Image (cartoon, rainbow, N blue to C red; front, side, top):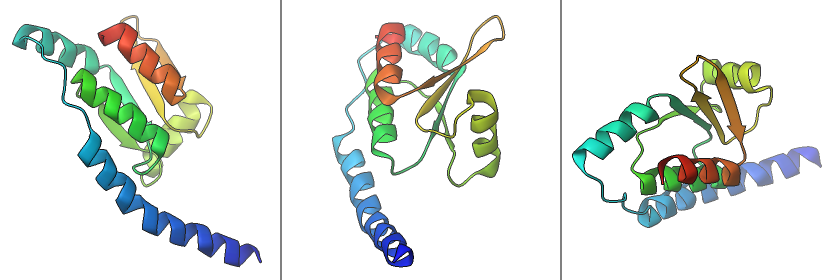
Length: 128
C-alpha cells in the first residue's frame, strides 16, 4: 500500500510541477521602477542574501515572486538536487526546510530566516 501511495504522489508531482512553473512564469510581477543608482545599491545589498529553495515548492515560488517584484538579484540555491546546498542548509539553519533566506550581516553573522511570509515581510521592510 505504501508503494502505491508513493507512486501516486510522484505522479502528481510530475503532472503539477510543469503547471506550477508555467504559472510562475506567467504571473511573476514586473520589478518596481528604480533609478540606476538605487538598483546598484540594491544589487550590492542582495549579494549578501541567498535563498535555499525547491524549484516547484509553492512557498518558494511565493518568495521568488516577491524577489522579482522588488527587483532583487538573489542567488537561489537548490536544496533538493544539490547535496552541498542541502548540507549547508541543515548545518547552518538547523532545519531541512524551504524556503530559507540566508542573510549575511556586515559584522559576519549569519541569519537563517524560514517561512515564506516572514521572508516576504523582511524583504518588504528592508527593500520596499
